[in-house]
Amino acid sequence: MSDSRPLAPDSVESRCLPFKRVPLAFGPRFFVLLVIGLIWLAPAFVERRFVYAMVGWDLLVCLAWVADVLSLPKPAQLSVRRSWPAPPALSVESHVMLAVINDSNRAIRVRVLDHVPPQLRLAPAQIEVDVGPLHEAQTEYSLLPNERGEARFGAAYLRYQSPMRIAERWATAALEQGVTTYPNLEEAKRHSVFLIRSRQIELEKRSTRIRGAGRVFESLREYRQGDEIRDICWTASARRGKPVTRLYEIEKSQTVWILLDTGRLMRARVAGLSKLDYAVNAALSLSQVALYSGDRLGILAYGRHIDRRLPAARGSAHLRQIIEHLAAVREDEWESDHFQAAARLLTDQKRRCLVVWMTDVAETAMTPEAIQAASQLTPRHLVLIVFIGEADLTALSARKPDSVSQMYQTAAAQEVVHRRERLLARLREHGVLALETSSGGLSPTLVNAYLEIKQRSQL
Image 1: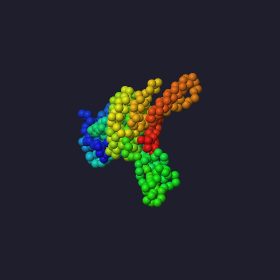
Image 2 (image 1 turned 90 degrees about the vertical axis):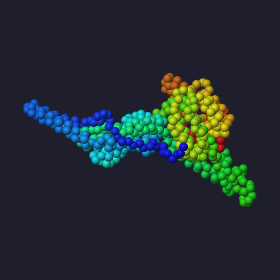
Image 3 (image 1 turned 180 degrees about the vertical axis):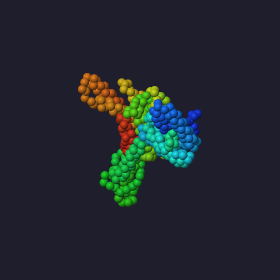
Image 4 (image 1 turned 120 degrees about the vertical axis):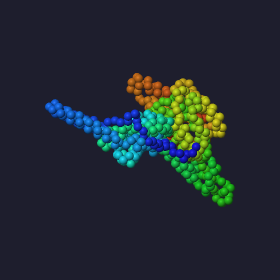
């Protein structure tokens, strides 16, 4: 797949067609003029001839309405264009541009109602704009997507009037279009600062050697105080007649797999978004940093069955594929099959790699399947498993109770927190890197953990 095609949807434009069989209506001033004609009723109580004057006034208003209708442009003389300055992203406000093109010689006022799917905007998208003769007018409305994936836009409906505003025409423009809502792209851009930080770490290693840093040879330089003896290149030192130190850099071209649990537990909502939404945003942030660092990255999303799988690769085209796959990830109403995901990864990835596993566990006394499945991967791969916890639960466990009911709530919260801490400790005993973080802090925690693993050359 080429990465030349932008993420933003393509612009669509369509000529208008008449809406309904009789696409005509009365404007607001038509009724105002009719009400003004009721003034003739007062003298009509004295002289009946004023009734004829009122009827004549009403006929004059009707003739004005006919004249105004005939002066209005035909629907075929109008066009509507919908364009996108940026792709829609989850929980990020974006804008849609609507342009009305008037090919007639009359100025009009247009009210446009765009058919927007409810997962992108809850209220109807209705705008009003004045369009001059042989001109184009453009305006915009905002979107705030609350769900990832494909959504379908419908037609745009127009009601337009002349400056007299006595008559009105109805028209419709076929702007049907499929639009994909992506994960939070802005959050991934913000976390690119972590990439800058990782590069700064590499530069700092040129002057200060850190034990456990990368062992890929980079260059030679003169020995400085603090350099390790094992890093001295004795052959180069013999040629130059003075100590020379080898410089190393963090290993690149390593493989990273992201496992996304899409099962029932990930449907829990925090601050309007599901845990899976936070996990997808974190996966995108990590993907961007890992790919720009030179690593190969793959995606495996699973619920009851394997939902999405993208083999490990690198490059900007692969990042585009990752974004599209993450946008299509859906929550599963069933329990996840963690063993199936682990078995699939062991089949697909033979060489050692870093497995970043984002999941959650039920609050039961039994050992969760996710922990048993992660233990199957540790003999071959380095596993970083991240549980998405509840910030409210931690706060509740630390609260000082003021009543008997609060005491029971605090005790229950403390038991749950203690049980999760024991699960994390059990995982670490089996060689798994285990973390628990709140949904809001998932992205920075994940990227920091990845950079620390790279810095320490644990992979």
